[in-house]
Structure formats: structure tokens, C-alpha cells
Length: 392
Image 1 (cartoon, helix red, strand yellow):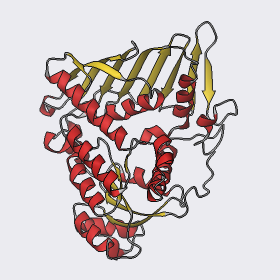
Image 2 (tube, rainbow, N blue to C red):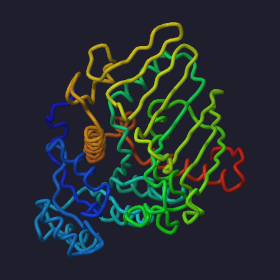
Image 3 (cartoon, one colour):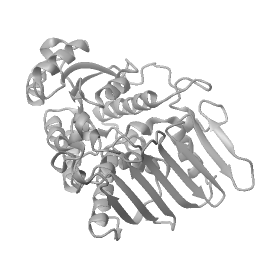
Image 4 (cartoon, rainbow, N blue to C red):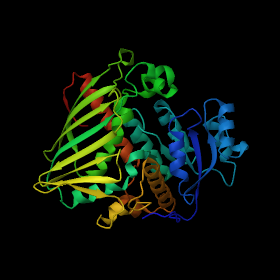
């Protein structure tokens, strides 16, 4: 159980790029990074494309006005001159900027925590992975839902064979907040998410499905997709060629099959993500709408509901619990958990602890690479006429 005690030797000097007043994700990053004040300390930022608005915002966060920069290039240049300069940066900017900023961050000697999807192309991720290894820096990806403790409970149950042979995987992440084209009129973030030049080759595949796909990988690390079929639609025609709805079928390497539905036009739906995994003995189901519990359904027995913080859970399911049973934990705690993992990975990299990093589970650059592969294969299948493709 986590209680706020330090898990690294000192707080890391942390900066942000993006995540300003008008952004949708900046507060989530700060909630995660600063929940445990023993892990990160916000010292600098280039918070906004509008320098004055960004400076005003940073000052209101308590950042020294002299360290609220007009752009990330200036920030890197000035922070490098300081003995107490930033050493890790979070990138909370639109998709199309991630590659350029991540590369510049690594070359400036920074560890990087980046929004998903990481980049547009597999080759870009592989290049950045090599650069990060050369610089001995980590690149983490903010799959913000993946810090829920019950996901690790599920992972251990599957590893122990408590579900038997895995047969069926069902993934869903849907909402209705883009059910009309008015979404683009009233949200700056929504406008760029449906612009291929900024968002990349997909809308909901990149914006929604990468979260759920990573969570399924977290639960099923030994199960790999062999083939998939993707069918995508643009129900709001102005969004084409980007999709606002997608259905998928998957074939896994052990013979299991999968289905997935991701949508931004599921009018009225408010329960977000659900992952159901069916084995030969039992099934489990996780929903981020009720992340403090895990449904466990053994064939021929009554349903069981496993609750967070309870002593009957695996130690892996208790390790990141914060408040204990009966006390609700949510998305803020999940973000805090992954940021704490980023901090531990950064300190391990700084002391060159390769053995620790080899077995430590957190959303690293390999998770980012897998997410980009997922997007590219889904788009390739859909654009080829919704046909089966080998997962490459």
C-alpha cells in the first residue's frame, strides 16, 4: 500500500510543455506528478502556445515567473544554464508535435513523459528508442488509466492460471461527446483531434483505443495479436478520413479471439472503458467506471466481486492501493501511480540499474511503440477495405 513516503532519494525537478489553461490533460499530469510530493517538483514550463497566457498560467501554479518560458526551445536553453535545471519534462501537446519535442527533450538531456499516442510512425518510435538508450534516459507514455491496482490483480490471476486458457478478449471504450459536429465548434482540443495534419491517421483509434489496448496488454502480457480486422466510420462526414467509430476483430497467437468497439458517437453513454477476459475456467471483467472492483465469474459458481484494498487480493493487487477498502479511488490515483512509476524508472536509469528496469512494469517506450503499431495496423486494415491483416 502506498502512503506518500518517498520511494526515490529526492523529488525530481520537473517541467511541462503544454498542459496550460485551455488544455484538457494538463491538470491530470499535475495531479499525477504532484500527488506524492516526494516524487516530482514543478520548477518550469512552456505551458501555452500563447506566451503571455502561458506565463500567467505558470505563475498561478506557483512557478517562478522567470522559469515560465515562451516556448520549449527557450526553456531547454535556459534550464541548461542552471545548476538546479529541470531534469524531466512532460509533453502535453497535440499528437503531431510529440516526435519533434521528444527528440529535442532527449537531446537536451531530459527524461521524457509523453502523451499518447506517442508518434505517428513506427520508424519514429524506433529512432527515439535508440536515442533514449544512447542518452540513458527513459521515455514514458501517459496511459493514465493503467495505474488502477485491480488491473494488476487481474494480471496476477491470469498469470496463475485462475481463468484457465484464455479464449476471448472483449474491449470497449465509448462515449457520446462527439455525437454531433457541434463538438468541433466549442472545443479547441476537439478541432485538432479531427485534423489529420495534427492528430495523425486516426481519431478514436489513437485517442481512445490505445488506452484500452494497453490495459489489455497489461493484463495479458503473454498474449499477442496475430491478425486483426478493423472497420471504421465517420458518422460526422466532416471528420473523414478520420473515424469517430470503429469495430475490430482480433486473432491472438494462442488461438483466442477478440472483439473491440471504440466510439466517440455512442450518444448518452457515460461509463467509458470495459475489458472482459474469458478463460476456460472463469472470466474477469474490469470497468474504469468502477475501478475499485473486479468481477470474477467462475463457471458453475456464484459471481464474485473482488474489492480493492482487501487482504484476500494478491500482493500485486495491493501494492499501489492508496486509501484502503471502503474508500473510493479513481482516475487521480491512477495517474499518481503511473507518475510514481515514472519517477522510480528515472532514478533507476540515472543509477544505471538495468536489472530493475528490465522487470519493472510501467508504460515505457515499448508500450508507446506497441500503441503506434496498433494504430498503424488498424488503419491499414480499415483503409484496405476492412480486411484481415497480419499484425506487424
